[in-house]
Image (cartoon, rainbow, N blue to C red):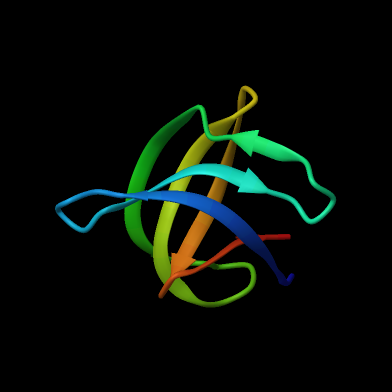
Length: 76
């Protein structure tokens, strides 16, 4: 499997936490992140890499997105 690099709109809180708000696809579609269900340090097991994993609800479905030193991706 490989990484799908993402463009993310992120809110940065005063405590330094990054909160992803919206995914911007290359074709112009935008998907708001409805809710963040879990945040933790984790490895992307299918494609490698270690960072912060966000389990998010987007349009009623759960997705895992990763922040690896400011570079956002999801596993394909």
